[in-house]
Length: 284
Ligand SMILES: [Zn+2]
Image (tube, rainbow, N blue to C red; front, side, top):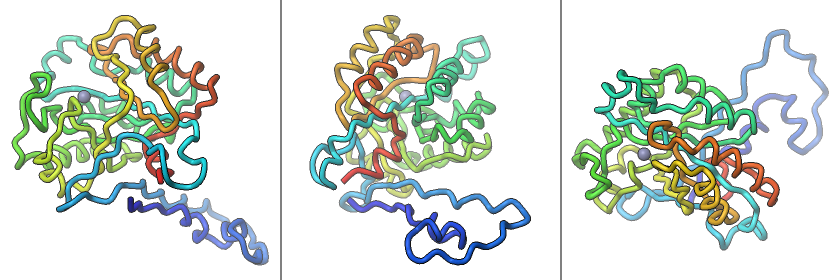
């Protein structure tokens, strides 16, 4: 798997930074009078395209290969789909909540790095929240399409995207994140409903994204029993797991309560929470 990481970038920024990167330390320089430029943003890792440029698909950190012991590291990525379908504007106007600010506040309180797969429509409806999530280093925003329509059929009754508009769906969502002011945006894409086929992987090639699935289904969609959701996650998590949950109160009302149980329990078992970019970066 080819990955593009720029971990070395911190070592070429300034003379001062060089001192911490091995080799003889240069004579200390006086501190600059102005505030130093922020470190260049690290480029998130991606996977190399598949045959004929097909969009690559990441599911979890592989369990074999790579540096010794790495595969068994107890890390887990919680991911939250911020679902809103293009035609749900009237329902939002009528009071239905497709956001979940209490969940985001909980993740902040518990300091759980997480990846939010957001639709472009969600970012338009909840612009201030999209910006707040997308400027908080605890989170990264990934792409869940603009409309939340299906990229293969059948897919839970979702309307289907034509293959000629698939890449455009992804670009439209990225544009919505930019307009909202989100900055921590990663080039990952989750298919609505997780539904895809070979045609979709080919059609998405121009978008240049890595598709991200999961190995643990939380079952939080339309669930009302938070304990059942928590049990399902706690039963399913292995080192390197990627869990799919939702950040949408109307369709996943028990998620916050489930996370309140899941996080301390997994920490108790020795797990560390990471974003998808970290899970992918350290994959063999
Ligand atoms: Zn979704």
